[in-house]
Length: 177
Length: 187
Length: 131
Image 1 (tube, rainbow over the protein chains, first blue to last red):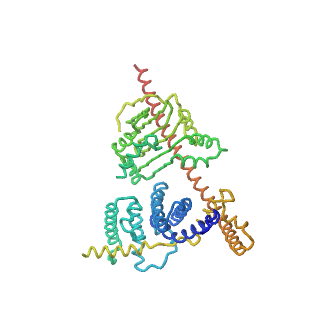
Image 2: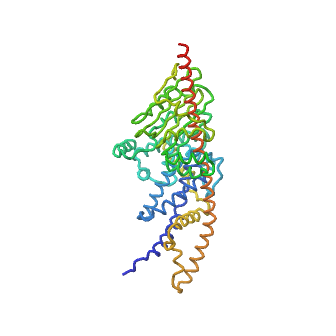
Image 3: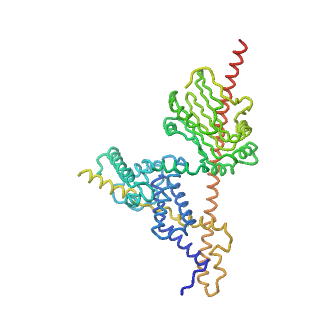
């Protein structure tokens, strides 16, 4: 019969797990915050707070999928709370310093414009668009994370896309969309 | 659905009271878009206590303020300054005033001044004959201010607000219990 | 049909524009340092890394590695914690200024109310005198 883990060993393993979780999910959490808040410094602070909250609640999480769900949920809620609490001014992405980014295929001008437009969406719509296109989540999964009806998620997504399409075409002109 | 679930929660748990029971209507919040200068302060109990830690015990004014704030549950301020007169409507003022209702609230000052256009309402909330909150709505030609201070506030503590940080003293004797109205038109 | 094609292109463009970005290089270290700093409020016996020093001598290679890691974390954590405290202080000062501003505004509007009431009372007294 296997020997049960001592408390110290369990704690040490838990710390190692936590470090691994941070490294695995840091891009996800940070990016959701960055796309939502438009401010790299605020995004980093928020992301740190999310992981610290995770650290305090690690025992309650059952699986890797649960951790991912939990992180997305908490990050989303914290983004909305952060904005409401701090009345963070809308930071133009033109003014914010460029964070380190992987090489992107596609039109950089278009990407930049889309990032700005997404950052200008109403809060809930912004979060839905980020979860859909950054995290590639389905509407039902987004509805679970945000505790919203699926219908609301879908209609918000449709309206947001229509608005984005319209604004991108008007400001950039004949860009291939 | 979410609004309904909140309503049910509030009805089911009467002991669970939110610090700010006077809401700022959305159409008033939107005035910030028209204002040349906006001040928005929203501080609930924990935030107040945290901020008050940074008030200096060595500064007599800040020390008094820390003592006052220690008992408060919230301070909420919206102040909008406009370039032109007529930036807000009578309906918007009325929507603010209508928020101050419910048990314990009394309007103790309601002044309408035709000659300079300044209109001020002061409401007290009393619980067990003690101040539990104050709302001030000041509608001036180019400025609209809403102040809600929530908490077990003694009237003399309120008077102590005056004289701090350059704020004039409020004389309790001159603040009537009932509401006098100025002669003149209303906004 | 062309709307569907447009939507599909827009969605592809959004996926590119909203691709995940890595946080700054030391992000994970900062999180771990803060987590350690929070943990350090608890009794020392609960700190797992401290237990390393009580392990049997035959575990030395592990002890050396873990000790080095702990020292690095402490050094990094110490500097980062200091910056964290400075940031907290700045945020606290900002909150204090907001509080003072709120009290100032409340006071000035109360004074406005008082002056209006005084004006009314003066007017009433003057009228009574005339009568």
